[in-house]
Image: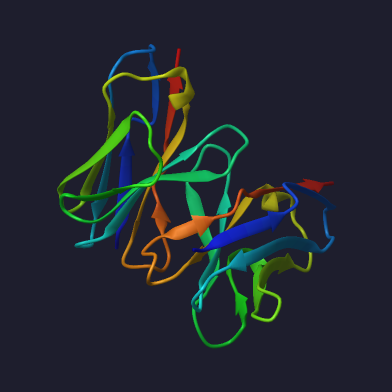
Length: 113
Length: 111
């Protein structure tokens, strides 16, 4: 069985500050890991993903995440927050045996001017 | 390129009425298809997924059902809606177990 825990349902940062959204996963096999973003009343959009290879992955809009197997983590970061980053962010894990992804409960990011 | 469509975009239905939400994918073949529900302020709940025509896996027992009559068509149905069925319904497709591509969603309000 696989699971995802997103620490902090709400995160608030000032514009220009570091963004750190935390995600821990559980998987019995090597996982595929994803971060998605959702703007109000829209579907989810892929930010970045880790499948194999380099553990630091870069995505769209300046976001990046690092896969740390020893910590079972896949935290999302961005050096400098922009007002347009305000949205809900979902971490997800999948593996070939499951045939589907498991999503975390989401973290709402607020960016203050 | 691939696109995913959902309709209707919004729907207001009385309790006890039937439901049919449709999702279609263009530009790919034999996709995995998924239905999720997102209640207000909450995460995504996987309702159904399908790896092929007529193959439906149900994740959560409820009064909803899903069907896949064609390769790229996925339908979510109910015979009698409950108040608790209100929410934002998202359809998604994937080529396998990697990235899921989401539709724009259907906002359902049951009164």
